[in-house]
Amino acid sequence: MSSPFPDPAIGTHLLLLDPDPHARLRCAALLRAWGYRVTDSSEPALLDRIPLLPVDLCLLDPSDAREAGWSALNRLRQRSRLPVIVLLQHDSTLERVLALERGADAVVPKDGEPRELQARIKALLRPREGDAAEVLMFGRFKLEPMTRRLSGPGGFCVVLSQSEYKLLRAFLERPHSVLQRQELLHLARGDGVTALERSVDLMVSRLRQKLNDDPSSPLIRTVRGVGYLFDPPLR
Figure (cartoon, rainbow, N blue to C red):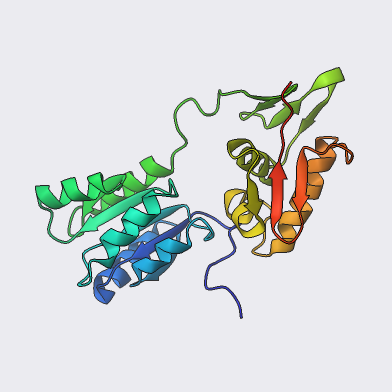
């Protein structure tokens, strides 16, 4: 059975969760007109599948009859930093405060000016200021995000592809942790990534080659039947 979620290699993917089918249809059409890929649903329980879903940002109307949307937002914030915009039908100060306290990154009225929603989305998807200039060090290796240049001992220097760079960033952000293939697929989505687990194996193989990874003492260890573990050197 094919996945209902599009190939994560193609464009920015938004998840729209709204119990009102008419409002959801209007909002999804607007988002697609702005060039985003959109998965829309009435089920806030989809948030429980983050971070396995290849989603860049979520728009959520949490005010369903069962209060399931608020509960799903609470659970999401316990394990993910996925940007979330809460869409409010009744834009009251109390509901705005509630949304922000429960982890929303922004709150936008559903009947508000579309340009405000568009601006909020762009702001949350924009890389954090200073990220491009940051230099990442691990052991005797240095990674330059601006150029994706990886350098190391003995004059070692290579340029990573976009997908290889995102994969290495995912490993650097979660060292000594076993990462499942589907999770890596989401974290490292980029050019050349397909919605198949074997594509992760191919990306890891290419990254190992560029790291000159020593099989006898590998930086990236295979955890059979599960995924991979990044074991960076201490010096």
